[in-house]
Image 1 (cartoon, one colour):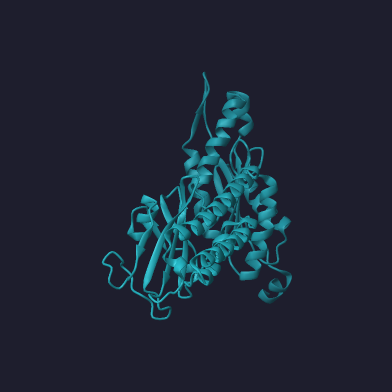
Image 2 (cartoon, one colour; image 1 turned 120 degrees about the vertical axis):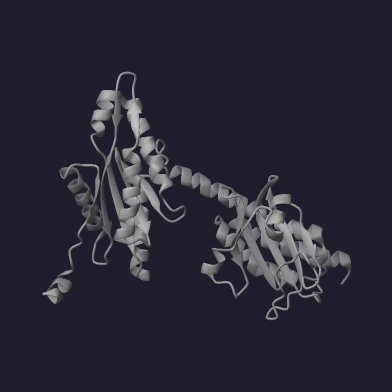
Length: 352
């Protein structure tokens, strides 16, 4: 096959890859497809994609075809910008080409006999001039795919992946904004109900813990009456900021339940751990003070928490947390109350 025909075939394969990933609206689907299909096209052994975490200024492994890396280990593989070869590519946006990793002093790893990988290509994923992530590709020294040695063609593959991932992230951001309350930036009441259904189903399926926190601002009407609705809004925003600061990013689901009520869905969280989280929020809110021109006022929260049990319906689950919250109010406010979960009928008979 002539070089022209060879490169044309590779471009056609690239077009097919691009068509598929452009149809996806989920970044994880895109990178998983990339690490599955690129090795077939390029004759690779291992392909991994790292995505950029802007908040932590690092890249984390989002997908890999390395069978030795399970999902739990993958979630812990992360490089700060400038750290290691992957972090260096993320920082400089320049590719790194290593022909023999056994002989290269900058490569800290070793070849894996299982895959026969000896050479390495590390490329930045760039869209709109900004870092999206990093892709790493390893292969044997006897790789006969000329495209593997063509940095321009490799970069073309990487660019298509970066654009697709960036588009998916922008779409996810737009959806996220639509699901958030305009004032507090917490998730909406509708979002709460949709995701509580999902988390309850997940807890039942995988036999994991799930807890719910309900919070109400004590004497909020007095804040609006005495300090005005502008200060009232400041109270809601201030409390929301504290709630967000105490949530696990990508795990917990903080929502504005309505008016001056807030809630948080805590997956894989026991009642005791939920109590600790609720108490951190309550104590931090207790330190807040809001002022108008002539008057100042402290605010507090009454909180109820409940741990999910399989026999509870969604309504029962919410009502138990709600009842615990109102018990906090009747017992003096500014406190957290655990909801006792009634036993199932058969469990009660067994206990007797």
